[in-house]
Image (cartoon, rainbow, N blue to C red; front, side, top):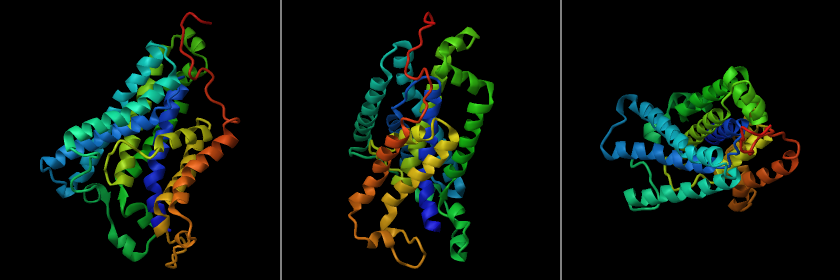
Amino acid sequence: MVFLIQELFKFLIPLMIVALAGVFAERSGIINIALDGMMIFGAFCGALFIYILQKNGVSADGGMGQLYYILAMLIAAAGGALFSLLLAFSAINLKADQTIGGTALNMLAPAFTLFFIDLLCKQQYMNMPYGTVNWFMIKNPELAESGSFLAAFFDQAYISTYLMIALFVILSIVLYKTKFGLNLRACGEHPQAADSVGINVKKMRYIGTVISGALGGLGGYIYVVSSANGAVQGDVQGAGFIALAIMIFGNWKPTGIALGSLLFGLLKCISATYASLDINGDGEFLLRNLGLPNYFYNMLPYIAVLVVLAFTAGKSRCPKAEGIPYDKGQR
């Protein structure tokens, strides 16, 4: 059970934070299906920072690895925010179709990252020369040896787990309990009414989209660190699209997103670790012993996305003005 929880956090945390990223853009009135691309671009920016550090002989001795990890997350967030400006400009200034714009960004991000990875590394992926485990992972082997359940939370863990849970709570409060959050949501529900009381709709939509990009880039880097040992290869295995499904499943609300992330995170965890999951702690690997092909487990999260969307999409209520370009002269 300890192993299952440790692995669950590796998938749950990035999915939860990226789904919340989608909420900030869509609550402001901008459809953001470019979450996958923002994750890829943010992951590349964060990985590039660590790659440069290690190539220049920087050491993580004395606990400096945690500081470098936090700096890399900030750079990934900045990269995602910068990338999101492409969506914001096309949707807000050019009034382009937001779905097509998001699709284009999802195609641009892997092409851009693979081009520069090939240019810098002369190969199709960028990885940390010394891996992420020794740099970023928090280890408390005495907890594991004692058999304590606390090992699930404080052994072989990442500081990003604790930071992102705190950030999720803070941003949820900001979105629903502050004047800023009210103004942002007003722009996604009735922008003309928001404008009539002095709210700058275009500015709020820019802010919502940039916050969305920052969280998407942040989630992307956390995802590749925890599940791909820091290797970036222009792909996050569709995690951005799963985050979109979580957002819809959660009805654009933080509580629903947290529950959806738990469900889909568990399915992603099972698909990645089914062969080594000892569910009962008796040394029997039940899922592996079923004899099902690994393709079945790999498909589970995506099948769940289709099933959940089929049953919940019609009941979900998206912001009323989502995807509609704002025209100040229209009433």
